[in-house]
Amino acid sequence: MQIVHERPGDAALIDALLDTAFGPGRTTKTVYKLREGVPHDPSLAFVALEDGQLRGSIRYWPLLLGEARVPSIMLGPLAVDPAYKGQGYGKALMRHSLAHAASLGHRSVILVGDPEYYNPFGFTREKALGLQLPGPVEERRFLGLELVPGALDGVTGMIHPALPAAPQIRRGVRRYAA
Ligand SMILES: CC(C)(COP(=O)(O)OP(=O)(O)OC[C@H]1O[C@@H](n2cnc3c(N)ncnc32)[C@H](O)[C@@H]1OP(=O)(O)O)[C@@H](O)C(=O)NCCC(=O)NCCS
Image (cartoon, rainbow, N blue to C red; front, side, top):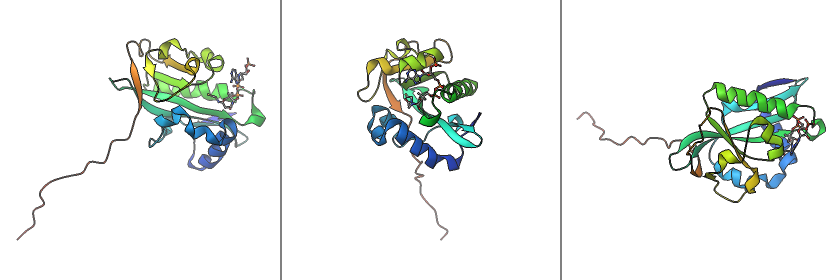
């Protein structure tokens, strides 16, 4: 198995994989409100390959936490080809991407997912208790992880999408030679 950065040619296969794993209605979920108009972070997008074939994918989105707009990232979607479930692809994508996120200086990670799967990686409900998502989710599945101890201490309020900065419109008086 190889874990490599997602390549431009992987996008169509990943879309199909996500439709299979989560159903075509996946984009109506609350977490997609935090992804609308925001590209995923390419430095944290990885695919798992076996003999060059795509077996799984993980992506992360940038976020801003609470009124203090503390930068963070949202893990997901994570999906493995159903024909290859239970062979360690998911865990390998998790470990690799979280280690990479920490090495890039990210301080915390938020996700909505099954605690039974994510608790062993250190995600807990407790770390996200002070935070709110912009729509309904099953409370027990809303989890947080500190990559730097204390990074989520006192961080409370609504989670916002990290929208790209609007292009600057240069206003000024243009002078023409007479
Ligand atoms: C969840 C998913 C990414 C796991 O990937 P995977 O490659 O099959 O998992 P791994 O081989 O790394 O790990 C398998 C272990 O995870 C457990 N597991 C898998 N899905 C689980 C879930 N939803 N809840 C709890 N445990 C789960 C398995 O029981 C197994 O446990 P074991 O190691 O004690 O035997 C994959 O099954 C998938 O794509 N599911 C559909 C999409 C999804 O639910 N994504 C995550 C949702 S937020």
